[in-house]
Image (cartoon, rainbow, N blue to C red; front, side):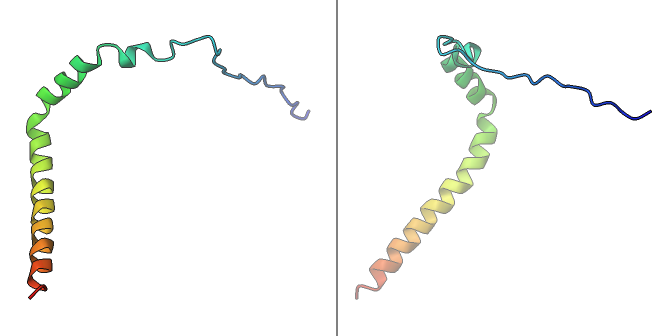
Length: 72
């Protein structure tokens, strides 16, 4: 007795061009969601962004001073 192949049906998902509500919950009340995320995580965001901004500012100042030093 050999194995008999089983015929599988393929499921194809399609979205109607007339269907406009794809992800309504994602965009609903977006400003309050952003405010909630920022107010919850402001300490972490500050601790992440402060060294990055400081390093960038230092590099820009250093490069500008190096350019000015080569003038004379």
